[in-house]
Every structure is written in C-alpha cells, then in structure tokens.
Image (cartoon, rainbow over all chains, first blue to last red; front, side, top):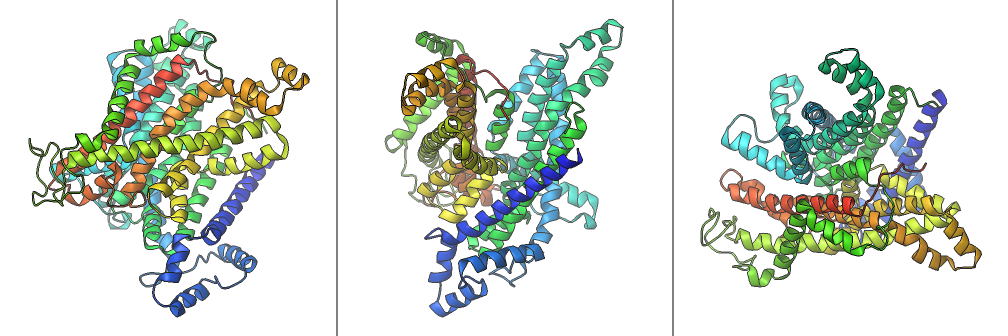
Length: 314
Length: 302
C-alpha cells in the first residue's frame, strides 16, 4: 500500500514534468506562435527586445529550460505583461479559491441530483419516472454547460430576480452572498455530471440487486428500503466512485468555460483572458496550475480507490 | 458537455470490440429502422446536413447583412428575430450549422485516421513504439479534451483551420486507445498467427485481418466524437477562441447574445437549442448504432 502511494505520486510528478516541458517548448518552438509573434510585431523592435529580455527569451534554449524549472520550484511564475504587472502566482492565488468553491459546489449539486435519481430509476425500473430521468440525462449531456448557464441567468436572475446574475463574492463577506452567486454557475456545470452519475448509479444498483445476498436479505424479511439503502447501495457505490473521480476532474474543465459566462475571475477566466490578451507568462502559469490540479485529483482518486475497495491490494 | 459524454460512454459501454455480425449486412439497416429514436435522429441529422449545404438558398437573408431593425423579437419577417446589429438570427443559425458540421466531420476524420493508425501500430508491434505512443496518449488522457483544445488554440491561434487542428489533436487519443485495445485482444488469435506463418505482410494482416474487427467500435466512437467536436467548437467560439467573429457559429452567436439576455431572450435561446438538438440526435444515433453493431463491453487490458 505505502509503496503504491509512493509509486503513484512519483508517476504524477513525472506527468507534471512532462506537462511543464510541453508548456515550455510548445509556446516557444512552434513557428508563428501567436503569443511569440505578438511580442515581435507590436510597437518598436526595441520594446520587443526589452520584453524578450525580460522574459529571458534571448537566452539559449537549454538555459531557459533550466531557469523555467528553477522558477517553478521557487513558485515564481513571472509577472503579467498587462495591467499593473502583478506576479502570476499572486493572480493565481486570488483565482484559485473561486474555482475551487465553484467546482466543489457543482460536485455537491451533481451528487444531490444524481444519486436519488439513480436510485429511483433502478428501483422503479422502466417506470415513467425512470424514463423521464433517462431523457433528462440525455438532455443534460447534450446541453452545452455555457448555454445552460445563460438560460439559468435568463430565468432566475432576469425574470424572477431570485439570484444575482454574475460575479463572485468571497465567503468572508457572508455565506449567503457567496452561495447565491455560485448556485447558478454550479448548476450549469454540475448538470452534465449529475446525468452521468445518475446513469452509473442506476446500472450499478441494478446489477447488485441481482446478487444472492440481496435475495437472502429479502428472504429474511427485511424491509425493501432497508435492503436497498443498507445492502445494495453500499456495494453499488464502487463503480460510481470511479466515475465520480473522473467527473470531478471534468468539473474543473466545466469551470473554465462557465466562469466566463458568469464573469467569475477564477482560473478558467484567467486562462481565457490571458490567451485573448496574449499574456504569455500568465498563460503558462495558469495552464501549469490547472494541469497540477488535474494530476493531483487523479493521484488522490487512485489512492482513495484502493482504500474504498478492499479487493484491491498493492 | 463533451467530456461528460466521454466518460458516460467510456465507463458504461464502449471500449468494445467485435465486428458486424457476419454475413448479415442488411440486418443492421433493418434494426436501425426499428429503433425509432435512432431513426428520428438520423432523419434530423440528414435534414440538418441538407440545410447546412443549401444554406445560401434556404436562408431568407444574408447572415451578415445589417439593418436598422435591431433586436427585433421573432416575427413573420424575421423568423427567429434579429441581433444587436439587425442581422437575421435564423439565417445566422443556418450558416452556423455549416461551421458545426464542417468542424464536426473534419476533426473526427483527422482524429480517426491519426488515432487508428497509431493504435494499430502500437497494438500490433508493441515494444518501444507502443511505449512511446502510449506514454503520450496517457499524458493526454490525464486531461479533459476541452482543456487540451484550449491549450492547442493558445499555441496555434484562432480561426477555422486552427480550431479543426486543435480539436482533432485533442480527440485522437480516444481512437488510438480504442484501436489498440482491439488489436491487443485479437493479436494472439490463431488466424493471425496462421497469417503470419504463411508470410502475409504485416500491412495486409493489419488491414485485412485486424482492422475489420475494430470497425464497429470505431464507428460508434466516431459518431459520438462528432458531438464532442461540435460542442468543443461551440465552446471555443463562445470563448472567442474559435472561428473568426465575422463567421456565424452557434458558439459565437451565443457569445454575442450574452450582452443582450436582459432584452432579447431569442438570442440566448435559439442558437443553444440548435446545438442541443444536434448533439442529442448524434448521441441517440450513437446509442442506436451501439446496439445494432453489437459493440459489447469488455474490460480494458492493463
């Protein structure tokens, strides 16, 4: 077990090294890279040379590569080329809690919608309710999350005035303002995942319900609800857990686009703004941090999985 | 949600092999006509394709023609209303279908060719080639396709061609993985050894004996991938990273709509509806094909 964790973490670090290398090289080597090009053509050559010097782009490539890693280890990701030239790490620090709040809340919303729907679907198989949930799942998967976000704003903010349309409020300014700003974007992101998790819960539960020990539990006269909640659901959570792990990583992908709908200055918004503004250091830094989040989630999920599933031994 | 569909499909059903039921080519057409959802979807998609091809003849206005009837609600004159520049929304959505279909079909074609080729090579030859290909694919696998597409667009720049390249590079690993796993599952079969023993060239073995086994799962994967590609393009265009702003795309129309959702609901509703109906139809069709082609579930080797 211990050696497995070490191995898994090591593999995660290797992936991060590869990502950092790709982020370093691809933005530099590919000819006509728009970000590099913008440094050369805008304004006078002297200013361009200054920026290149500032970014260390006039150094030999291997040196740039070493410096790149040295800085990463120091947590120094350079400064933004725009605005007040804030350090990239500082911008990311501000954005990080917003993205994490959003991802966590979408995760919770997705689970709250999905697990009950999945259980009902499995228990009342082929009922009208089951078919409606199936249709809803298909709709949820076919709806672009950013469009769902727009629809939610139109309904709950513009028409009903129940919730604020856009923006983010820190939880230090009150839990309700924080929460109310996040409900709509979190629902937009979480819907697709709740569709997946609901389908998984349904099929896993249906499979478990055919096991002998369920028949035994019923035969000894246990109440059906008890059989489902205590015996069946527990064992059907395994396959669901694996999907939840992937889903959480993908929720983060959802935040990238949905943050832009709701003008939440999280990592996703930062990434897109930096690409559009051709803010070279900020693009690199944000990509790196987003990649690190994914890798950590993957590693954590694998480790967690071995804890949950007693059948796996390493 | 592209990546959402990805995990649903992967974890529940695909990863499958097994070819078409032998010698019954007519059968699956017949089962398609029996599957009402899949059939309806096929008809919707056919209609959409025709509408996209003949958009210049079908659209009542030039999609970029501006007039002073700005932000008009849907009416007989403007079926789906007009946008902030007075452009006819129906015409723009019709032209947007072209972008979606071009991106959807061409990215999947590229991803399929590249992915299947690499999957065949990796699975059949194994060794360092397999190592090299799989290491990269594993790396890409660790991240959602959409993030990879955003990253690639950041490198290549925006515009239709760049979006196609970026999205196909973001998706090719799905095909490579699938093909490789099929190859691995049949590489050790007797008829492959027999073909090798009588000196059949590798290319012929790959083409004639191995690839046909992978056709059914690849068809299913390709169908579903078209919907991911359409969603990815819409997402990129929505973020301003897709096609040029002057080109009407469902994503870019929605992006424009954001500033006017307080006054013009039609701008926010109809383009998204177009995306949803298209993606839903593709998903239903993919689901139907999976049943018809009998793509079974099997454990991924590892």
